[in-house]
View 1 (cartoon, each protein chain N blue to C red):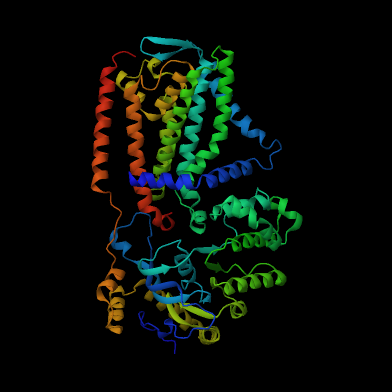
View 2: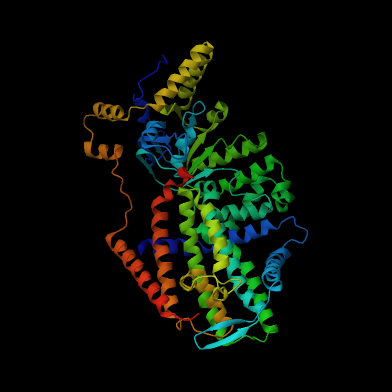
Length: 344
Length: 277
């Protein structure tokens, strides 16, 4: 059932046919044949041949996500979930393929942007500023944030006096009030006790209702069940399955069970083979398979997606000329100055 | 040209953010200290004191000649040094810290959404307080030596602007280069130490008899020297910036060149920083 499939087997579930009635038709995120390769250099200076040995963190992800959906992202460790969420957030770019994001994204990251020497209130202002809010916008939401974080008097204490739970609550409260269109939560809801968690979930449901899209990366099936309509299962860099929550979670569970039943030696070989697949990803083969599966597709556009002509932002001719002129002028003036001065 | 414009637009639209973050950084730096924010004033003053002691009190302090061409004035060592030192301390810290700023904060920038080009500007903004303190100290010392405030001092604004422009674009260039070659910082640091000795901060190169003439003149062209001597000309009422037009033109051409290369490289490689750093 879970044999070592060919790396470029596309699943059909990625095309969503079912739409719930509260969804709008608007596509928020569309990924087409996204891959991401990391270089595996042993030393900082390695030859180009050695550089060819890369590690394909993502091997062709294609999906569409509509507004108002809450998508869960599950998969074993190292399968590429965080890489994918970084690409969706716009923090890194895919190696090939295309990702179209229709709105403002925000990663709900709890600890970034906080300075432990400043007070809670100052941190709220700082982090909001860093997220691109103006002073006016911050003044409007600062009371909501403080209330949501439930910190009372501690808000005016320096952050280093907080417990880790308090820090996380503050960070989460700030991130959540940023008001993005697309929120990406990378395992951030695993902090705080149940009462706080409940309020987080309520807030998420509010967002869903107002048409915001949510990406929720988590290992906790209960949390995903509660929050998400659909789940994406990323397995070793591929989109193994994308469909309604229950279906995918069941399939994932079955896989885990199967994996656990394997004897240790088989497990090790299996893992090794998977890693090898990702290292030796046959990119050409992938391209050909995509072309073969959809004969009616626009070949030109597809080729551009897979083998992008590196549109390097080269300097325009005018700028190059200007630089040459400036350098010449510098030399002329420099020499003139130096020859002119005879005395100290 | 367009790229420079883009970088400048990014800075201007984010001024409130730059200023606020710089302020918060400074606040955080002295948090928990018993004397707190007083160190913002004391620290630069102590540095000036130490430098004066090392380079002034331990040697023969002949009055130093400040002037352009035939018209000049002899100034005592302390005010002469302090005027130069205050500009140097600012330029040095902004260059070194600004060049490291992108590499150190790369994670922050990838998670938050603001243009990376404002990071060196944040470093610049955070050093302005210290610069103000040292300049005020210089003005006070000048008064003691008989150099009272004069309308001529308005020229200082021109030199401040020149200083900001140069240090920002230089830091922008260095920050991009550091991400490509980590080693660059190890080269930049000794260069800055070298600059301190050869940019006229603590002694006039002309007085060093061992150094060949052409080298002295070459160092006159270096941008750090331009700013420092410019401030000295201003505060001691010696020369307008157009009176030494060769160095002025050279300086601005150099700043323009650095700005073009820095903006081009930065904008081109921006999206790859997160993978390279």
